[in-house]
Each structure stands twice: as C-alpha cells, then as structure tokens.
Amino acid sequence: MQVEKNKRALYSPNRSTRENLLWEMISENIISTYNNELNWISETRQKLFKNNIIKEEEKMNYKIREINDKKYIELISATTPLSTENDALDLLSLCWEHEVYALMIHYEALSEDFFNLKTKVAGNMLQKFINYNLKSVAVIPNDIIQKGRFREMALEVNKGNHFRMYGNKEDAEKWLLK
Image 1 (cartoon, rainbow, N blue to C red):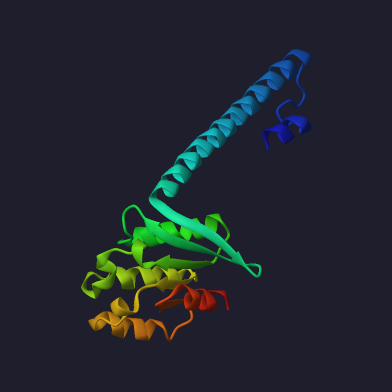
Image 2: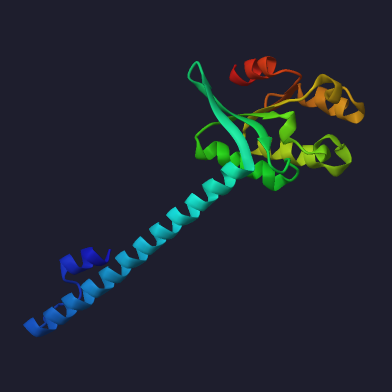
C-alpha cells in the first residue's frame, strides 16, 4: 500500500524539488521498515515451524499411507500415550498439515484413560474428530473392545460414519478407505 501511495505521489502535492526528495526518502524508509518486519516475521515462523516439526516427529510415530489415491495417517505409537483433547487437536493439525483427512490410531498410541470411560478421554477425543470431520478408526485388540462399558461405547460408535473400532488393521483400513 505504501509503495502504491508513493507511486501516486499522495505525499507530495504542490511541493518543491527538495520537499519531494525528502518525502520520497521518508516513503522509502517506511517501505523498508515494512519489508524488514515482514522478513522478520517470515524467519520467525520458519524457525518456529521447524522446531514444531521436530517436536511432533519426536512425539508421534506415524506414517502417511496412500492406497488407490486415498491417503490416511497411521499413528503407530506415541512417546506419551494420547490422553487429552489437546492430543486430539495435535492429531487434527498433523492431518491438516499433510492434507490428509483420515486417521488410523493403533492401540499402543492410546492411554489407559482412553479405555476408562469415567475419565471422558475417549468421548472428548472422539468429539473433536467428529466436530472437525476427521474420519478415524482405532485398531484395538478384540479382548479390550469387549470389556465392560467400553464394549457399549464401541458398539455405539461403530454405528456412525466418523469413527470406528476394529480388532485388526485390515478391516480398519477397508472401512477407512471406502
């Protein structure tokens, strides 16, 4: 905008040559300041983004899978098991960062609190996936799926189209990619 104002001579109506020179120098100084600020912001974002990628890669063991032109992220494990809504948001941002809208989570990546429904971890995480329209599936051993109240929740969520639980990777992948 400042460059355009300078081109149109908005700062120099009816001015002498000396005044025009001063106003041009002031305008160039303002433009230089804006350019420096933009460069600083760009460098800062790059450094922050680089650090976030390193932290994310250290935190989560995942692979991007592509089958028949359909992609999904397979979360194999995590250094600290997923146990909060923020962990679900981290997964959402990971998917969006890679422009992938399907997610497979393995049992090893989930905390014990996920399976204890009193903690509401499972419900809160699933709600994030549903709210942000991320098709996701969990690969959990059948003996865990069949335990107590968790079985009831598994039966209920398996009726929907946003999240499912399967006992093996093949069935989970088949549903995720259809």
